[in-house]
Length: 251
Image (tube, rainbow, N blue to C red):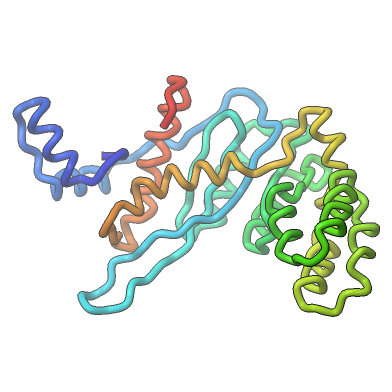
């Protein structure tokens, strides 16, 4: 049920056991079941936060309505997701065993950093802008390949002012936008090369992969969810994925 549609689960259960449990019954049972919250036992040294989307059920003929949820992945450990409940996500993270120094990664979206800024304490938390999103935004500027390579090198070593200066003579909007992006996230752009040498995570791919795995269930073809059931199906999917991790099985 956590890995496929309830309709397919109905067929599989009947084939495997000979018992027919209607998909509507399965859905009702899942919605009423108290699923356990994941918990880590060893201190978390790094985590990442990102957002996904889910399609809500709308009246026949009406336009689809997509809403956001937020997910967090404690690297090499467990993950979870919350539907329009940032407070719940923060409570869960802050109840986990966090290291005295925890690296928190995200892309450039304000919604992600608004959450990360409330994880742990300011002394405990190191905020890092995901290197791959940083590069993605750099290459949106376009123009001289040599300039882009120079800027990439500056940023790899954390030289933000030098990177900004490379675009001072450009007047087009993409260049100005990227300069503002760098200024906004200046404190989150470290010496990536040093971090990599010290085995400190510089990418938020863990949570992006997590969201893709959640999406493979909640975004199956034709899926629309009752708003009141979204939180439970997200939790169910995360329980399933976390169990795969604990068993060392690819989800």
